[in-house]
Length: 568
Image (cartoon, rainbow, N blue to C red):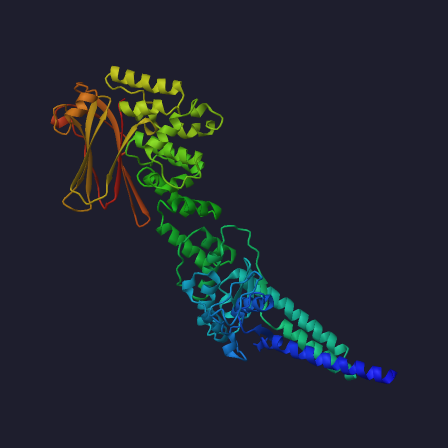
């Protein structure tokens, strides 16, 4: 009896095992062996198949490392995801990884390519590097910014940093191989030799693969896009980035690529504009490139009022650079009011850093008019006192401009009272100005000659005296003549509306100290010509109402002319 019971028990157990095995067969048949990594894969897009999805995701991420391999499938038709949901019911579990489309799945069976149009930095790099080296195996793998970049020895010598890293790591690995080989020769004996040989081969196999280069990046301006471009220049030195900016030059400096660094500097000097001048100046200070720094500062001296003030990039101008520009004797402005208006807009953007568009002038006026107290007397406004002290507010003589200065509540009452009293005494004394330093107190008027015109004129008024500023092209050549002419109240150049709203002095003679400064900027080259300070008596008659012409050769538009006047 005990033997029969044991027999029935064994028979029942065997029957159950066969049934369980048959039930398990359909579940296992849903997976097929795929690829050389011996992984298993479901034939349908089942959302609960987390293992299969993770394996597919990992295969895509590491496909770029298989530079000379093709992914082979035991069943290519099984790699295709079924499009209709009838063949593969939806799982109630959440889908953690989005199922791949048919074209993406079949691409795993083909050779992996990385089109640059996708815009992914890693793919752009591999697309170029693999094409240049004809899909050769990498000699090193750079781990930087969370990505792996496969590199090749013939191109590493263009980067001092990468070449040094590669040389040091290779030397260290060679020492390890020599030490292992030496220890293996001293311990070989009998059957243990074979076992050690097998272990040595495996160790050498690990040590003879691509070297891993790890490079830490602390500069936040270096992005993956910038690093990808810099690494691509190892294989294609003629490549062009989307923008020559701080990220590219910082990455070139990090990798020790001096040729690319100087090329980037050259491109920056050729592309200074309202959108780049502030960032380029920051780069020049960062790397102590005085040449680029001087160019950016000179550009600001010419185009702060006429160009940068019309763009939102004005808010990127730092305090120290603004102050240095205002103190420059080469600063060009159309008038003293235009310069003060530019500074006021800049101050508004500093106080509203989140603004992404340039404000209207009425918006700026309303903003400062709402101040309960004088802005420059408030704790948060005192640091801007030096900025407004660099302005020549005494050169603002139009009544509606003076009224605007009073309404915005930026300047203290004492400052405005001082300006108004000086205007009154100057008019009362026939135009005599209290000038102690001509270079810092002369009133500036600007003229922009941006076309090849034969004659460009501008009428100005200062304390009841009217002048005609002239820039004449001599016989359509590159020679220009610049001069100042005093106007009489009956001259046609003086409009009747100006006489009705502005004072007019009938004084026959007026002593004037003037200076004409001509500047040009062409192809990153600046030219500056100055007549120096000239004293002359201007009368009402023709033989005494004109200044001596100031001739300059070799000029081409745009030409920025500054007429600085003072009445001693």
